[in-house]
Structures are given as structure tokens and as C-alpha cells.
Image 1 (tube, rainbow, N blue to C red):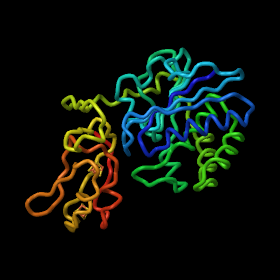
Image 2 (image 1 turned 90 degrees about the vertical axis):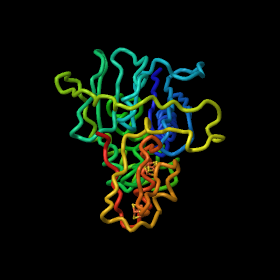
Image 3 (image 1 turned 180 degrees about the vertical axis):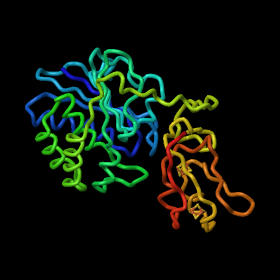
Length: 284
Ligand code: SF4
Ligand code: SF4
């Protein structure tokens, strides 16, 4: 049996990735299982999903503690403890990362691969430049490095189960399959950027839906941050109106100001800004 843990953020397609992997495995004649674990069901929130693939009936039902592969849809999630916990000896860590980012400092005995799934998704018009839907591209890469499913079965699963842009998603899977870069040479590994200094931002206990956004500090979710070019700002206030996390306030002259601790980096403000004066940039 092979077990896979998907780590992503709400909107990237981690849950669908696990489901598509399971459907592709079924088409390959194997026995699959997939299920998600949601922390907070909001765009930008960390999401974990799991898939099991076996040639025998699967009797376990619990979450996966010792995966054979960890698929990281948002590289920023590697900053947090536990991302690769329990990964088996010789297991794979597959990271959505651009070509300039080769790898992260991984423990010995772990195999690494990266694929620029975000760029592939944008090239195939999947999602938006600020929130590309990377799941099919990274599944193609997973199929290549692990052989857990065939590319043919993955494409057929996408054709059957993805209602929007099935051709583009199949093409993204093929591109991920072709472009994935295994990084088995430890000399090619670059250290992960150090954690950002910030004070501890615990989420309140209890159902988040009952809490005011002002109580919920989501900066630790962020891998991108909005950069506002005020010289081109028309003070339309759209960013302030549409930000779901009270992360934008207005100064005395009506210009937007970012409230760092509340911004989860979802990119909605950049999407709604009429003159496109907000750019989502990587955290330093
Ligand atoms: S400021 Fe922009 S990126 Fe940050 S939470 Fe609000 S809408 Fe999302
Ligand atoms: S949406 Fe853009 S133009 Fe409008 S206030 Fe915000 S930054 Fe300025």
C-alpha cells in the first residue's frame, strides 16, 4: 500500500487532488481511498488531504501518520513543523516550487522533487495568477516520480471528474509529468528560508465561524503578501471592502493600509483592485 499526504491551502485544490489520485488508481485497477482534513474552511487556510492506494482491500480508515509521499502544494507550508512528519525512509517530498528554488533542507533518506506547478497552472489558465489551481500539474509530477498511478489513468480521471477546463487540466498534468525535477543530489539542496520572526499568533479555541475576524490572526498562513503601489491607488476602497480578514484599513486620507497580523495572503485584494495596483509578492 502507498500512502500520500497532500498539504495545501484552501483554493489550491488539495482535496480534489487526493480524490483524483484515488480515481486514477481505481482506473489502474487498484483499490483507493481518499479523504480530507479541514482545519478552517476558508480560502488561504491550510488544508490536508490523504490518499491510500493498494492492490489489496484497505482496512484502515484513519489519517495517515507515516506517508510514502508528501505533496506540498504551497511551499510556505514547509515552514511549519510537522509538514514531513512520519515520512517513511526513502519517501518522496514533492514541492510546488519555481526552477530557482531547488529544494529545502530535508532529513537524510528522503527523496525530493520539485515542479513549477504554479507556473504550469497559470500557463493553462487554471485559477488566477494570485491563486493558481495547481492540483492537476502536481499530480502529473507525482505520477512520474512515484509511479503510484499511470499518466493515462490520471488523464482519464481528470476527463471524467473535472467539470471545468478538463482539457487544460489534462494538459497541466502532462506538463507536470514532463517537467518534474527529482533532486536526489544532496549538494543541490538549498536551505529553507528561516521562519519569519513574528510573535506567536494562536487561533482562538472553538468554532472560528463564531469569532470576529478581528480575533483571528492569520499571518502565519501567508506565503505571499500584498504590496500596494499607493502612487497608482485611486482610493476606491475595493480592497478594504473585499478583504475577508479585516487586514486592510484606511488612513485619514482614504489610502489603504495593510494590517500585517490579519493578512493571510489570499490575494483577493489584488484580484479586485480595479487599476491592478496591488501585487502579491513572496514573503522575504
Ligand atoms: S489584505 Fe489582501 S491578501 Fe491579505 S487577507 Fe486581505 S484580501 Fe487577502
Ligand atoms: S482597490 Fe486598489 S485602487 Fe482601490 S483603494 Fe485598494 S489599492 Fe487603491
